[in-house]
Each structure stands twice: as C-alpha cells, then as structure tokens.
Length: 432
Image 1 (cartoon, rainbow, N blue to C red):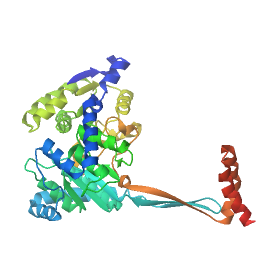
Image 2: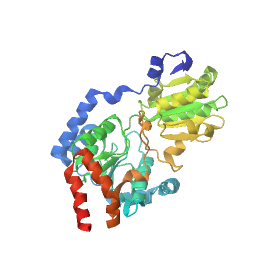
Image 3: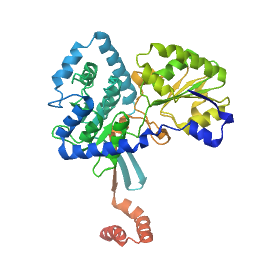
Image 4: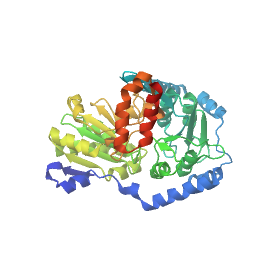
C-alpha cells in the first residue's frame, strides 16, 4: 500500500498513481483467447467440453442443464436464502422497471411524422462467474432486467465446480429468475459458444456479465469479429475509490476497501483522505480486519498495489475522481450529496457512512455490472435499455413531402447525389 500526497506529485507521477493494471494488454492472454475462440468456432461443442476438462478439471458429457435441476435446487434451498434472493430480486425489479423506455412520436414539421419504437433483443447470453465465488448476485443483476425488457431467450452460462456440478445457489437463482436455458461451461470457451453458437448453445445477439481477465478479453475480441456479438460494456478488474473525510469511520472505510480487495488479485483499491492521520487509521483497521478473512491471500495481493492519496481540497478531490472514473465511488464525507453535481465520471456512487458498496453489489436495486478501467467516461452500467434497441420510423403526407422537398433536394445537390434528389422530385411530379 502506498500513501501519496497529491500536491507533492508531478503531473507524470499523478498519472502513474491513477494507472490501471496493465494485465489487460497481456500478449499471452490475447493469443490464448484468439486460439480458443477460433477452435470453438471450428469444432463447436466438443471444443467447449475439451477446454472445460483442461481448465476446470471436469469431464462433461453434456453442457445443457435440465430445468428440473433448477427447480430442485430452489426447493432444497434454505428458507433464509430464498428470502434473501427474493428480496434482492424485488428491489432490482423495482429500480429497473422504472427504467423501461417508452415510444416517442414527433411531428417535426407539418405532415412529417417521426417515431421511435422499442424492441427487445431476441437472444442474450448472460455470463455468471462461478469459480472462486459463485456470483448469484450477477445472475440477478442480468436476468432480471433482461426479463423486464422482454428478451425471449435468456441464456445463462456458468462454470462447473470441481465436482462437475453447478453451484446450487446459482441453479436456484436461475429458477427464481425464470431463465430460459442454462449451460455448464465458463471461461473463454463459453464466451465463444455464445458468440458464434454450437449444437445446443444458441448464438447470442449480445453478451453480458463480468469475468476474469481471459473472459473479459474474449468478449472484447469476439465483438470485433465479423458477425460477432455486441457486448454490454468494456470491463476489466473490479475497482473501488473511497473518499474518506475527516469524520469518516476508519473501520467502515477499511471494510469497504477489503470487500473490493477480496474479489480478485487484480482488483484495484483507492482511497482519498484529507490527511496522513486519517489514512494511517484506515490502514491500521485493514491490518486488523484482514486477519480473519477467508480470502485473505487474494485481498493481500490486491492491496499490495492499493493507493492512499492525500488531498485536502474539494477541487483536488473532484479532479482525482473525474480523472480516474471509478467503477464504484464511495463518498464517506460530510454532506456527500453536495459533491455529486461535480462528479462526471463514475459507474455507481454510494453516499454517506451508512451506504457500503456491498448493498449495491447485492440488493439495493441498482445494477452492479458497471464500467471499469476508466470506461465510466463514456459508458453506463447495465440497465433495462441495455437489453433493448430502437427503431426509427417516419411517415409523410403529401403536404409533408411538399414542405420538406426543397430542403432535401438542395442537400442532395450539395452532396452531388442526383438519385436522392430525383427520389423526391418524381413524387412532387406525381402530386402535381
């Protein structure tokens, strides 16, 4: 962990302090991803099974999950787990249902009607990590808005555990969210299967969900290929930035930083403090809390590159936030709402001492699939609209054509596209 005084840094040092891990540009990762994708395109489902044996150590005879398994997992789930999943699902539904876009219709000039209608995507692939942590929350965050949007085929892929079985909580959540199809596979091979289709896994129009470095690279690579799928957003290792004010509770801040660090060894942890005293108090708390974490080794590795930045003015803090564009931004300061209007780039913001990042990860209602690696400058997190597309429609009356014709004809002449001009002119002749 590094403690850096912002005012003492050169511009070059400031850029280095806010630098992301370079692992996303790893040449070996990119080469491996390309090889696996091309192999799955060529050999289909057998390639997926072979890579599952190679990387997950599990030999499968089939990838398709029977809906009966999902139903059984839900039935067997402890009541407390069922209740937690149902409450989280209800909150996510409430927030996302409010996002549903409506058709619009505008008469731009007399007789010229322009409309925009909404259509759901037909088939989406939802990647649910299930390796070191079975992320049932990710299943909820993706499957719920997809269903609200009206997507017909909502495909789940998730890697098997060492036993060859899918985690029972993931199966139960799939039943609760009424996913249409589910497959036992993960990694690059699952991404490739959704991108281009196999015997049983359908080709998906768009792929959603987080994953490790290889999965993230695979999504981005597949999206660049001819007839490749769209993807939800560019993402890398998860990250958090906490702004801890003078009155912040050091134990709260430490817990939030650790909750991010336990995700992945590449997770990025940043904290802005007004003084070294505040930073040291938080660091002390981290040392005390980390000793009892089951995922201590992962958290320790992530924290080795953590940075504590000492910045004591509002303008410095805002500049750091907007330059970094964090995935998760926690404002544990007095009157945090006052800072929000100045924040232009962040995936999701958590206000005040009583709003841990974990509530957004699980059950507050907002979506936890968010842009990382600075992508928050241009991307939003997953929404209901992420599962939709828009079709524009226009219709002109005779009067409308007469009103707009001079403009269109003149613009066509400017561009030297005579057939465009004639397509209007011939209709005017028909009217006359």
